[in-house]
Image (tube, rainbow, N blue to C red; front, side, top):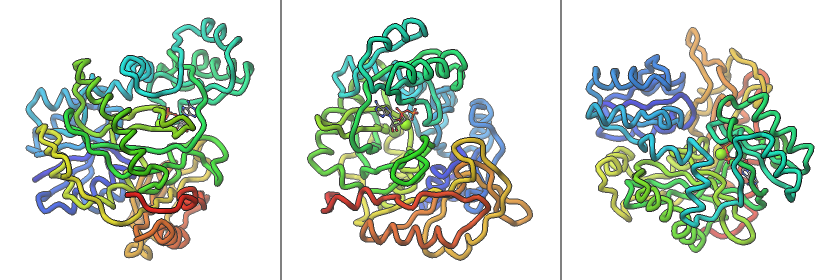
Length: 426
Ligand SMILES: Nc1ncnc2c1ncn2[C@@H]1O[C@H](COP(=O)(O)OP(=O)(O)O)[C@@H](O)[C@H]1O
Ligand SMILES: [Mg+2]
């Protein structure tokens, strides 16, 4: 079987790594891929938004399966384009992907189907937004409607901060057209967790719950990033809470989308805040999370190809997905300056030394004359897997300490939050 993985990050490297273990897979392509992926498959230079180019490639090579990592091609309709041509592809249709592509759509949808989420208002007009904010109770958050790479949410504590947020999103357009419509919603407090689920639109199978670390510095300080590390499973979600999340969030979402004529097949990702009064949805994503995928896939026992096909064929069976009795911790190594302007082209040392101890998933890397160099904000994900969260974390950090590149920054406290909670629920 020949497979194409669309994307270029750590998530896609983890997908390629997992697919590579399948006996059914003989050849893997990745578009555009990265230096790490090029060690397991062939990278082809086709852009993420070139849907026709990707479908032409799949046709020309008679590929058996295409797996889409990032949201952009999904929200542009890559699945519809492939299906139209009779090509097998894993992911939701354009209509279903709108659950991620438009936060305004997602919020209205949640309201209609009574899915717990923060109270909100939607604005297309900045003066109306400012009017509302002049009398609103703070704290609040201001969010861009469209895709903003995980950075489109601005917390505001008073009117002057809110004014600033409105100016940045709606006037200066720092998120481009994604910010011409905004959502203002209540600021939620609690632990943030990720629940990803496989679904064929009828059956829903949640994966291990995981926890990302969005902020750049230890102790959740500093600006938001695309994610500085993750661990799974997280004790913050026990079996009872998982059932509640299934009943109140996952099931009504998948059934609601079906009723709206937007059958969802693929990965539904719920970004949840565990508030005092229960879990609330902050956002839905229509694909695997990054870095969460880098900790969840290493714990999956199944052949991933089998699950992906059963989703595509609408034959996903309950109880078919099995997990290892283990924990995984992933530490992201980022370039100096990230999440702002960052440096590139620094040589990465020590990768060969850690190959046997930790999983190294590349994100922003390139190969130049046989040397790995940095080529993005998030450079590498280093994942340790072991029988406890403590051991998995130690493994990851032992490897991290043997890797270096100029200006390398990372958090020292990935998974520490999870260790405060005792007992194992999954
Ligand atoms: N209502 C909220 N209250 C508090 N924090 C929030 C709220 N909504 C989002 N956040 C924070 O901002 C981050 C990004 O918001 P999110 O809705 O996931 O949008 P995106 O990932 O598209 O930028 C979240 O991971 C969370 O940490
Ligand atoms: Mg998010």
